[in-house]
Length: 599
View 1 (tube, rainbow, N blue to C red):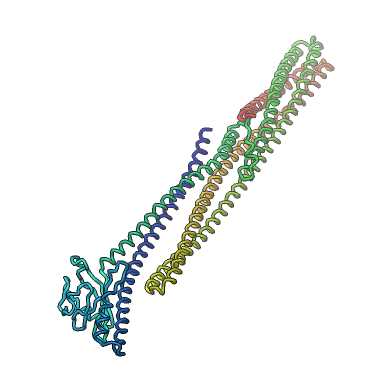
View 2 (view 1 turned 90 degrees about the vertical axis):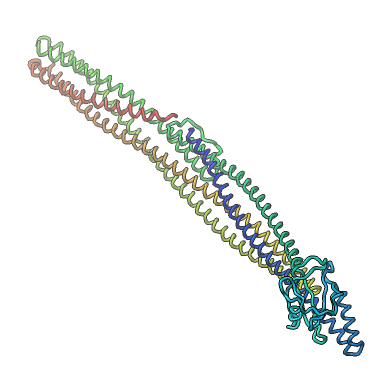
């Protein structure tokens, strides 16, 4: 019982450990995959953000320069129309551009160089206006004014150089855009310091990293919660499976040990699943075994009583034969006493007839008892064989359930693939909305409405991605439960196999008992034959005694014939004693086998 209890206890823990391991493996794999994808998405987003911000800065300074060119064209047109002189138009244009600022902090400004490298206007360096800056060089050896004018004369372009910031101390790299206003030979320029752009990019990157870190913490918390829930569910499910199996194994152990004095749990009998069916079949086997063992026990006791009667009968027969021999000797020694001796012999022969008749009745009862034992044994073998077939059907049913569970796993895999497609579409939609937001930023005021729509699309994409993730979690839980069901079906199948082995051992035991009974039947038949011969010899003895009484003159010859018959009868009785001893030994062996069962 301790061994069986240990197995069932370990089965519950094996189910718990397997489920937890599966959940951990799937959770870790899925978490690593999600973290990797999130990190990749974060990296792509950062790169896209950097590109978008860089493009935004470039677009911003280019649009500012183009706006100034448009404004210069307006002043130029006024001069051409005679509204003002060209000098007045240029003066108004310079002052208008001098006062122009952009960006929220107003740090953005524009300056104008002539194509001969003379500084026309600079709001930060007004003292240098009118000077020629052709030879102005930065710390990297770049000719600042020459490169700026060159970029502007080529139809507008970007160039970079190192320049002192407005604080008069900090020297930083600056990205500038220049474009020439050809009627006046002015090159309008503006720019952004690279370190300012990088600072904004770093802030955006840090914000994305914080979002990623929050996602990692959230996923870890969710994984721990799922693991705890899976462990609790596995413990309950494992206990539910192991408990009835433990009871069935205990009952089978008692049957195998021959102990039929136990009751089966009524709750197991009422179950509608395979365990309930096995329990009901086990109850039928237990009842059949109790009836069979009880019947065999009664027959064994009756057979033992018959053996005792046989032994007593043979003892009396031996005594009678001994007396007959004595009488025959007396007849041979003295003819004068033959009459009285013949009367004694006649009485003894009657006693012998009575003993032989009792022996015949006992042999008939013995044959009937053996036939009943064979009927009981044959019925038991048939019942056990049917139970083996039923257990085999149960095993096939468990295998069918296992196959159906595997098919369910395949369907869940298809659902998971569909979710992956939905997640990919949501991510692509999010990227498209990001690109749309960037395009809307480039468009300025005209793109604000488009930016709102793009933001709504991005939110819908994020919600779709979150919904897909929730479905993915449910699918993963379904996979874990399904795989857990597969493992439990395999454990049930293994227990059914063990049950079949126990039943086969019981069947073999009954077949062995059946063979022993057949051996007893053979000995009984031999005993019947010997008893028949004894009955025939009884008639011979009776005839001899009658002849001795009627023909006194043949007493000597009759005595010799009677003596010979007595010798044969003695041999037959000895043979019967030997057969009877074999029957006693077989009966003891049968009683020993039956004693294994407790009803």
